[in-house]
Each structure stands twice: as structure tokens, then as C-alpha cells.
Length: 286
Image (tube, rainbow, N blue to C red; front, top):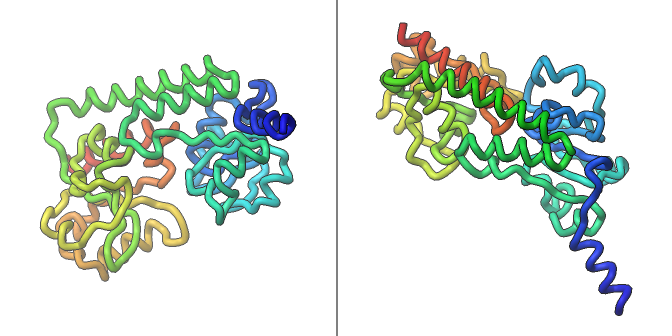
């Protein structure tokens, strides 16, 4: 009985030395956070690359094994002998790497970012600082956060007292548009950049909208999120030639802003994503 109790305590108080973190990252945004703070030597493998890695991080990234385009198998994961897992929350499910409880029982601490579920830029900063603490890279993490803050403050100041531009942020799908909603980081980015998301009143980060809503709102600019098997060019062709909104002025006049998915995810590219959106919106008003 005492042996069983001791084993239980070891499992439930799972921890590790900050000098001995062996991590697997299963999202591009967490991978880039870890690379940005200098944790590349503690990353055993990555997965779920949405698009191009930040140029200044690519040399580091290329030295780390890519386990899978999507979710790695349990065999691939445990073969590396990791003690930390981070990335998309969906990775810790029975159909992927197992539940959080199962992973803990196998000696793996699971760390998910809180900014996956909120619309606050501050939560991204907190996530970066959290990883700085976990990987014993606090000063590096603080520097990353301070640089992001400076970039975002600059865009905020430039857009002060300027009229907001009505925006439709299109992700994918044809029967009903999959869009950027009002409860995620994408909506916050649009607002900081000087836009007004036509789906801002929804309670999802990404979700299904309606073409009728887009027609009624008549957005001035359309953000098109680029990733996956359907290219940005193909999405534009659909919107212009076959979609229910093909006759909107924004579509006919090619008022599109390309935003790669990783630039509108809750990571170290958020400041750059805001700059892309802001520049695109102001170009369209000239």
C-alpha cells in the first residue's frame, strides 16, 4: 500500500529540473516562442507547421526533427523520451497523444498556453514569460515581450484617431464561410490595426459565419488567411468568380490582405501580423 501511495505522489507531483527540459512542441506558435527565447537545444521535435517559419528563427528550426505535418503518433513521441509537451490543446486527446492524465502518468508534463482561449495580447506576453521560467531563460523571454510591446504600441499610436475600416476576415470553406470571430486574438489584432471585424459580436475565435452577413455588412477590405492545401490564390479566385459575395466592391476591386495563419495565431508573430493588417488597411484608404 505504501509503495502504491509513493508512486501516486511521484506521478501527481511530476516536475523536472529547468536544465533538463526535453520538450516536444506541436504547434507553430509554441515552436516559434521556444525558438525566440533560445530554447532550441531543449526541443526534441516539432509538429504542425502552418506556413513559413520566421526567417530569423529558421536556422534554429531546421536543426530540430519534424515528427509530423500533423499530430505525431505515440510511438514517434515517446521514442524521443520527452518530459514536456506543448502546442495545440487537441494534441492531448485519446485519438492523439492521450489525455493529460495519461501523459502525466508516463512522465510528461503538459503545458498549454492560455492565449489559445482568450483575446488578450497580454496573455501572449504571459505565455512567453511562462516559457522563459520553465526553460530557465527569463531574460530572453522578457526581451522578446518588450520588443513585441514596442512594435504594437507604435501601430496603436499610428492608428489613433483614425476611422476604423470594416473588415471581413476569411479563413476557408464555401457553403458557409469559416471566419475570424470576436472572441480570439485575431479580432484583437484587427482592432489594434485599425479595423472593425464584421463578425466581432460572435462568441468564437474561428467559426462559421454566413455569406448573408458579409453581404449585409459590405466590408471595405477582406483579410484572407493563407495556409494549408488551398492556396491564397485559389481562395481569391473563388471569392471573385464563384462566391456569393463576388459582386461586393471589396472583391471586385481586389481589396485583399494576405495574412499567413501563423501571423494571426497567439505567438511571437502577433506584432508583425498587426503590422501587416494595419499597412494593408491604410493602403486601401489612400
